[in-house]
Image (tube, rainbow, N blue to C red):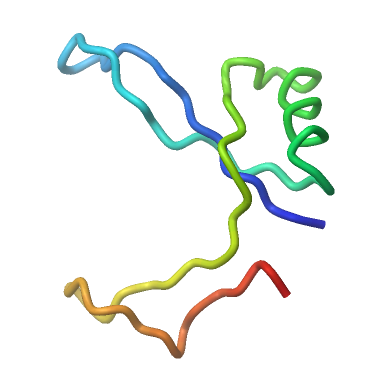
Amino acid sequence: MKTWLTEIKAICAQEGIMKTFGGPNVEADSMGEAHFYCQTNGLGYCTVIGQLIAEIPTKGDSFEPDWDKQINYDE
């Protein structure tokens, strides 16, 4: 099953302006199924924006990618 990313557009409680926030990840076979899942499980405020392919952590407190610890969701 694939993992899909969602986002939420909402007014920031601290700044009072519209912002885009990362939403929960959704597991489904297709983008349409991920959208249907959100609509039928109380996540209708989320927009499915694409498939999560990989996560690449960084080394320590730097911005240098740690390719050895990559999590590949596409396999």
